[in-house]
Image (cartoon, rainbow, N blue to C red; front, side, top):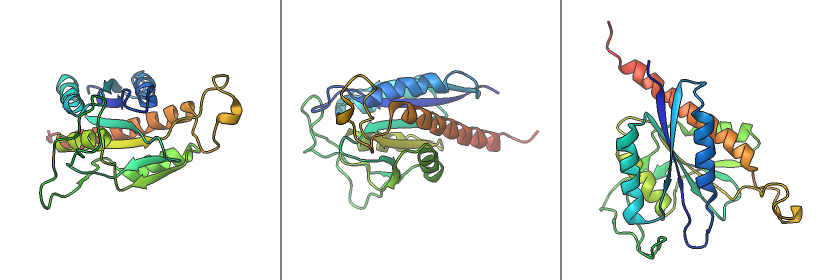
Length: 218
């Protein structure tokens, strides 16, 4: 059986965030998951924080890789815990300006329902907590690019497991800043990399089970 493919995305810089940690997390998780030990192939993509770019970049990556599962990462700069996002809403806020200074353009239609994660959220939460990371389920992915991209990914999920995870700023690596500037609640980059890699592998396994269930009987 061919490897199960996981698409992993992070974001680039945006106003107020010169270096987005999710870009590095995306690269590291893609490397860890893509080592091939689990029959899994991983592709990482850094999305531009622009409404006019990010959805197109996601669609292009989807078309190029035909992933069996999708893990999206975003920064929740003020959060004190990792947020496993249960829903996205097909709505952009014209008040939330992107890295190019433009507001969102997609308005939620009357009565439009939130889109639910197609991946299992409780196991992802359990993985994070078992790694000593403060984590909670979240009912809102916000009103910015994270929500916009999550909604786009769920709209094109076609039965694939798709999940968005919001992370806080990770703890600075030893020697990069004075230890006194770190916060006790900040997860380390290594713990995040490990936990997110396990989540990506779980998504791949969920996708594999779905693939096997859909195979015609001999």
